[in-house]
Length: 340
Image (tube, rainbow, N blue to C red):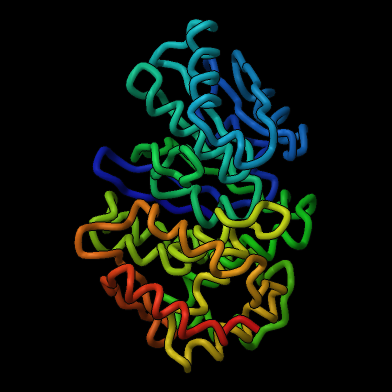
């Protein structure tokens, strides 16, 4: 399965297929010098398959975790390319989750003002949440993604074979982003999630459909001027929960799941809560809400009039509501009973 994603400067193809890594050389232009970036949590065999397709591969393996998503690590990648004599004709390939993808893309966007970037997401979360759309960046002073750029990949490959090596918790966390897309854009898909038994086939179909939905959104709003804000459903409070906790307490997708619960109608809440439970996602806060609230004031989405909150009034639709800090805190206070 594949489809094209259009953007201002052209288009790229998203490939979703089992065994795709074995023929990556026919999908991506890798007959050149290539920096392959992966992390210690990714099975080494994935990067090796990419290496085999490159004319001159160079691999950098960064430590797993958010700590690697930093300006210092991004600088190290650029320094490595410089020392190896990389030019604008060369490329970067990310083989890993969201941290590796964001970090690698940002380095590719900055080195010589931009070289080709390919993304090979190896988690459900990175496939659904960050593989398409061209947003990349790193964290700074505890604030997520506050330094970055819009930079489109040359191609994306998601090989569903990677699901075999992912822990069930990681799969569920990634599917939270797909559930988010169904809740805000596809009522029929959400109904399927409510009715169907959870199988590998359902998960694959959900991933593919969620990436398609996101692609349509980012095609219509490449620079997050309007419609693309809908992708932040669950993220405003979710990022605050994530910042207040740690990766053991709450994975990103789990935080997004928790972040959706306060910002929907009672009718949506009942259905959303049931689906989150069905997929093994958390519905109780892993940290005290008072610890998470201070991080809301640093969210990069704040403007003079407040922050734009994505609210789901009914399944398959969303509203963008601008609320003040006081209104947001009041809303969160009034919905504490939704965490059970």
